[in-house]
Length: 69
Image 1 (cartoon, one colour):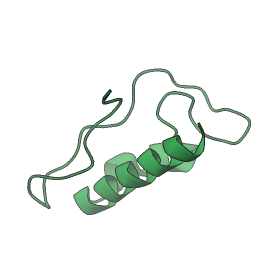
Image 2: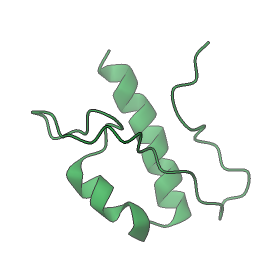
Image 3: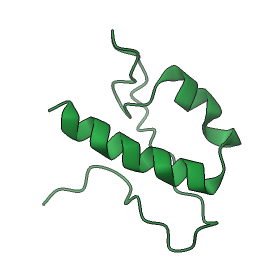
C-alpha cells in the first residue's frame, strides 16, 4: 500500500503536522492545487491555523483525494 502524504494522526494534539505542499503549485479549474489539493485560501491560512485545524485539513484532503479518483 502506497502512502502518498502525511499521516493525519497527531502523536500529540499540539504537534503540528508537516505541510502537505509537494512543490507542485498550480490551481486547477476547480480552485484546487494540483500538488496538494488545497484551495488558495487553505494554502494562505496554513501558517495561521492551529495544529488541530491543520490535522483536520489533512484529513479533509485525504477524503478530497479519494473523491477525485
